[in-house]
Every structure is written in C-alpha cells, then in structure tokens.
Image (cartoon, rainbow, N blue to C red; front, side, top):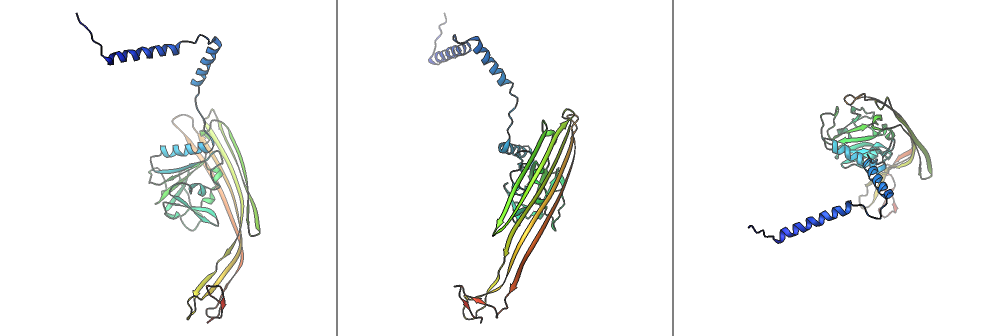
Length: 332
C-alpha cells in the first residue's frame, strides 16, 4: 500500500487554485439582480469598444508626435518640426521654427531670422533642399535666405546633421530639407484660411502690416489622385533708428581720462517687406507599388528700405573733448 504525504507547499498551491477557479466562476456568472436589458447594454458597449479603429491627435500635441515619428523613422541623425495644421507652423517664419531645435541658431537681419547656423557653423556651410531638390540663393553667399519661403506653404522641415546618400545636395555642417504638403496623406478635403495683423511702433513711428494665406487640398478617383494648392501674401513694414557714435580715443597728453568723440551717425529708416508665394502639388497613387508627385513653388520677395540721416566727424586735436566725469574741456 502506497501512502502519499502532502507537504505545506502542495496544500498552499491547491488552495490557491481552488480560490482562483471560484473567483473566475463568480465573475463569469450573471448577477441575480441584473436584467436582460442591462446585459444587452453591457454587451453592446463591449462590441463598440472593439470596433474603435483609431484615435486622431491634432494641434500642438499632434505636431510633436509627427516630428517624433520623422526622427524615429530616419536612418540618420535628424531634427524635425511639423505644422500643427495646414498653414500653421509654430512660428511666423521657417527660420524661427528651426532656431528652436537643438544645435541650430538663427542669424537675424533687421530683427528677422534669415539664415540658419547648424552646430555653430556659418550658414554658408549648410545646404538647403525643397522636397529633395537643391535650392539656389539670392544673396551674395552660399547661405539660403529662409525669408524667401512662406511658412504657411510648408508642412514640415527635416534637418540632417549627418550625411545621407539619398540627399542630392549636402552641406558640410548639415542639410535642411523643406517639405510641402502631400494631398494623399489626408483622408478628405481640407480648406484652410488664415490671416494675421501686426503693428510695429518705436519712438513715435508706427507702421501696420498684415499677412494671409489660403490652402486647398482634395482627393479624386477613390483616393488615387490628390491635388493641393496654396497661396500666401505678406506685407510687413519695419521702422527703426540707427545711432552709431565712434571714436572716443584718448587724446590728452597729461590726463589719460580725457577722450574725444571721433564722430557719429544718426539715421532713421523704414523697411517694407513684401512677399507672394504660390504652391501646387499633384500626387498620383494608382496602386500600392507606384507613386508619382509633381510639385511647383513660386516665391517673390521684395524689400525696400528708405534711410535718411546724417554723419559727422570731429577734427582730431580741434574737436570737443569730454572727460569721463562728463565735463567738457578745451582741446589740447
């Protein structure tokens, strides 16, 4: 006769198994006070939860997620910025948006970000492409002026910090790839209109400007053909003053604290910036194996500057001398 001995571990495992089985049966059993209507409503709620296909995230959170996806899918070290919606980048210009990314700074001209420096290198060491095509510049250097490109007509920007074989033109410090919208990336027709009003005021000078944009995106032939058209206009005046005194060289033989003003410049200027941009994209995707895109972009930027003022100089040895204490003295 074989006699089986149970230890404490086997008894504990058997007890836990019995308790778990009893709990499962208790949960699966329908409560006595639950009606058939309540059970049907609970069943329908469970079916609706299963049929949930996607959650669409928009706004700033959606733009951040799209930028993170671009960085994750890239095989190179890149930085990316994406628009919140059609015609809505985080800043008023592309250069301002790029300056927020790590390792990038903007060089300003008359207060406007016009050039991008990557990792401390001058903009002449960077290259710029539009949808993968190398861009020329209208300046007297190799640096591209980003004021030329309306931010309302761009959907995203990717900055390559490392070389990539798929890029046509690459810079020594990095490559900035500007990208326009792709109409087949949207599931339905999209129409967007935006307008802005700005006012610049300094020392009694007051100028007003405006900018507006219109975008249209649609799909045809059961989502096989996509069309996108966009227009953006900007009129932004900028008044200002310029004061550049120069000289202040020590001219006293006996007292080194005495200095003389070499001269000064006093100017009043008014800069008027006007820009018109037009974008069109035709995208074809007849099947899952072939896709073709034809895109076109036109931008005209005009800048007029009116500058009035005077410039004077003082004759060395015969000018008016000032001490550091602010008292005028005779010239020596």
